[in-house]
Every structure is written in structure tokens, then in C-alpha cells.
Length: 81
Image (cartoon, rainbow, N blue to C red; front, side, top):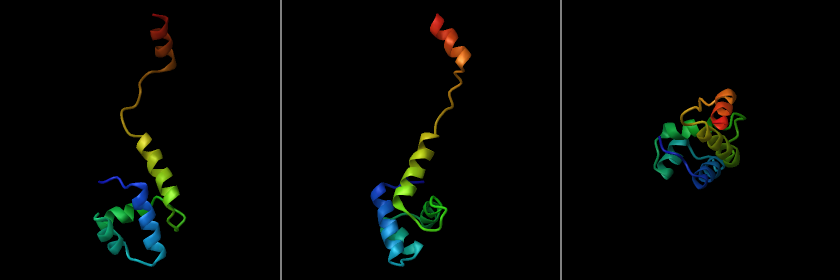
């Protein structure tokens, strides 16, 4: 899955306002149509907004990675040593 840039999200918003289809947008951005469908789900209101989609994407990216197993108790134990 490719990560879309903010510019690409603005292109999606613009082309949607012009009434272009998902497949046309996908072809324009050189991505799979399913990528556009997934991207449109970032704005649940039904109206795609590049700023909201970018914020949601950033929030989801920050959740990636290994979870920290450092509890407060363990942190205190380490800092005492």
C-alpha cells in the first residue's frame, strides 16, 4: 500500500469536486482504484477533505510500531539504578 502525500490528497479532493470517478482519479495518480476507495473512507462525513484525510493518516501512522512495555513502575525502577 502506498502512502499518499498531501498534494495527492488535494488532487483527489479537486477531482471529486469536478465529478471525476474513482477509477479516473486512480489512473491520474497512478494508484489502484481500491487505494482511492480506502482513502475516501478517511472522511466519514461523505465529503472528502484533504486536510481531514491528512490528519487521520498522520494519526494512524503515529500508532504504528512496537508498543512500549515500559510501565511507570519499571521506569521508576530503572531511573533509581
